[in-house]
Length: 113
Image (cartoon, rainbow, N blue to C red; front, side, top):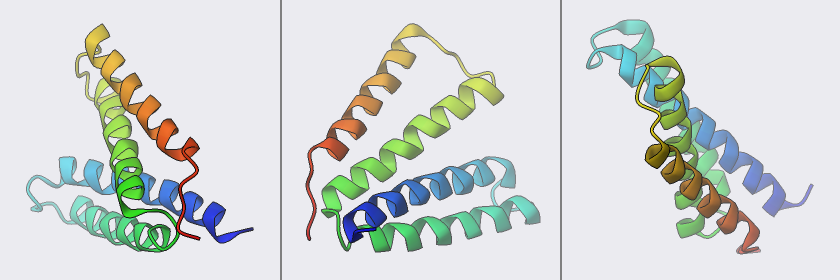
């Protein structure tokens, strides 16, 4: 597998680790509950390690935007599905627009190698 493809896979994994640490923070009660705090810290480390590899082959602006986009979309959907947050049409449309932006960045074909 070429390094750019591996970098994009790494970036997606980093985005999922971002979801893990963000959800862990929600349940850590200000880092006062041990297990959710440990989950958050492990998620942070995983997220940063995979992001660190990805930015070797993907421009930092693109990588960061995609990484954040995965987190924003994932956490917004998590909130809607599991935390009963509102799923208004405007909110869903905005999530969709973020998704289109993330896909557009991936399809732009930018890489550093």
